[in-house]
Image (cartoon, rainbow, N blue to C red; front, side, top):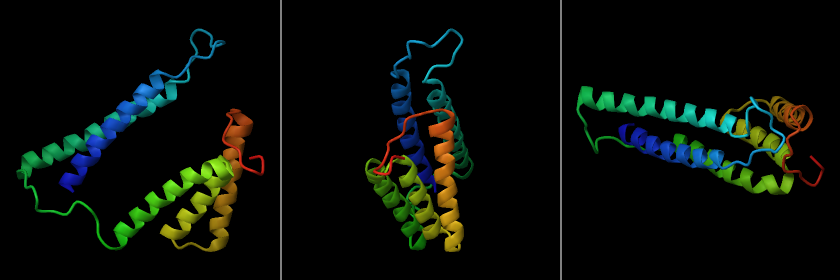
Length: 159
């Protein structure tokens, strides 16, 4: 895992820098009063957490190298077999989810993505999986559409 930890740490730091740039360039709403949090607040909190946790991962790996000596080339850094298939399925599912967002809308695509992901990775009964997908759709609509009124990509059904 040494090489994998180093690679993922570098990628996560780059991703955090990208999100930081995007968050700092978010436009300020004209009616934002003094003392109010702007639209960049939540992304900046997430960037801070990402940098902190990635730093902990990197520091732990450096400490491990210092304790045991750096042994390069002795390990595999990609999983094999079923673990690799699961990772490939999740990444492929995420790509398909991104494509379906524009077609089905956020709520429907997310509910379907969750149901398919749960079915593929954990073999639960179909009734439970459909219930989770339905409650995910209702919960997403309640939080984003009704409570905080954030416009989300809509599908052909209007949600």
